[in-house]
Amino acid sequence: MNNTSTLTVQNVVIGVILLAALLAVPHFLKLYHQDLLIYLTINVLAVCSYRLVTLTGEWSLIHAVMMGVGAYTASLLFIHFGLDMWFTLPLAGGVAALVAALLCFPLLRMTQFYFLIGSFAAGEAIRLTWIEFVGVFGGTGGLTGVEPPIFWGIDFIDPIPYYYLSLAIVSFSLFILYRIENSRVGLTLHAIHWKAALAESVGVDAWRYRALAFIVGSFFVGVAGALKVHYLGSVSPNQASIGFMVFILIWVIVGGYNKFYGPIIGVVVLTVFDESIRSFEVMRPAIYGIVLILSILFLPLGLESIPGKIKSWFGVGPAPQDPPLTDQ
Amino acid sequence: MELFLLSIVNGLIQGGFFALFAVGLVLIFGVMGVVNFAHGELVMVGAFTIWLLHAQYGLSYIPAIMVAIVLVTVIGLLMERFLFRPTRADPLAGLICSIGVLFILQVVATLIGGDGPSKQVPPPYQGTLVLFEFLRIPYQRVFSLIISVSALGSLWFFLTRSKFGWALRAVAQDREAAALQGINTNRISIIAIGVGAALAGLAGGLVAPLTNINPHMGHNVIITAFIVTIVGGVGSLSGAVLAAVLYAMFHTFMTVYFGGTVATICGLILMVVVLIVKPTGLMGVRISE
Image 1 (tube, rainbow over the protein chains, first blue to last red):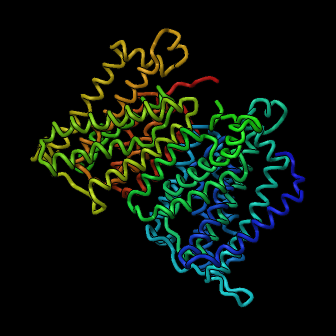
Image 2: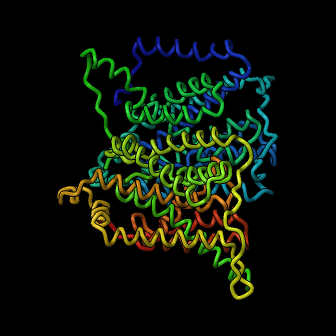
Image 3: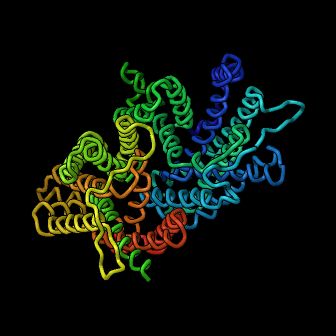
């Protein structure tokens, strides 16, 4: 993890192949699947920013609502001030970060179970505010009529240009998130998670670092929310419900939260899986539930741990260890 | 004035119902350290059983409640044995597993009841109790209040007077120390989740004739249960009961004067305030690290 100088030939080759695949993939898909690809790209940013929040070992239940904050900010700015996406995107992230900064004061006084419940309550209160104040937020139906930008003569209402645009924005955000995790700040976050007392004894202000992770994570998920609403065209309180939050949790946990790429694997694999069981209709949540339970029971480190497990079966490499999700 | 008195009575009845499932959540959390996110769905299963057996197949109300209690208890026991026990080292894993159960129970309910509009159960007890000429309470609500108070009373009796109750409270205080005293902690976990689930099933049975039944009704239940648990003090049963009654009053009055959504928003804010100002809640005890 400390090894940031990873510019080896092997990595460059893998990177080029990955980039080519990512650029080529929408051309092989139907319109419906192209839409799905865009949402998948945006969800990748949602899970990776969530991982930054969880690095300190605290699992919040407010991330989906923060995505909603970004989406609502972008919609309101677009509808009332006619700002296009280049302005709404950073502003949406900014407002989400601001809300997170304000919430730090009550929420970060809590840890573990209390933080989980407290963040859930705060998020639910924000969401119910959207439902209650119909005049501003449009009530249960939400806000509609948000449009993608037109730039350089390209109308981004088409899925392929919008996909490239979101791919670029998401990749850039992931790069920043990756650099944060591998910086001194990121290492401090890990230290707070695994050795909180020791970290504080050498002068680390745990509160400030937890706040930083929470605010930065919320900023990026706010951007993701804005990116989503400009393509989807509408936002509603339902999009930020605990249901979507649970999906973020599932993606991160099934993918594996110990590695940076674990949540990405989780969201990609489960989205493809979800698409392949589309014909089961009402059964889908139950199938999801079963997959979730099985992966917690039998693969607690997530999908990213599979290669390591296979290696250790064949006697190559060390046996992977199973640390608990939260340390006591 | 009449509205005021009626709201107090309705708040009390609601409070009894809140207390039934909040106490179950507290029991499970206290003994096993697991937040059972599917607790609202246990109530939903209870209510659905009443709809299916009583309203659809004509089984009378009391036996239908019995079946609901047994069914929900069995679900709870299966969860303990196959999900919570293997993941005991890790409280978050138990919570995630319970979310999986939540999805499964919702789908099962949808498959049985269909995806149509919310179901209703005609109240088995018709008529209205008239007190002092202006206070009219349907017998169904009176029944609900009596049953929930007696269930909570017998729970209190069980916890403070019986050997198992003592053992259960000992495990909730300190699992390791209890095990060292020769208490079988696995058995106590089973009792805790059995009692918690049974109360949830009973709550579902009692609420079925008074509300709209649909596969997603557990959502409001779990929010209420969280608020009540936090305000009462995590791990405190008497705190949960007290908080349930107070919160039900609060919610009833807010709903009467400001509407249901504002009532829930205020409840959630109240909960966050309690978490900040007095994290131990009304009756909780501070646990030093």
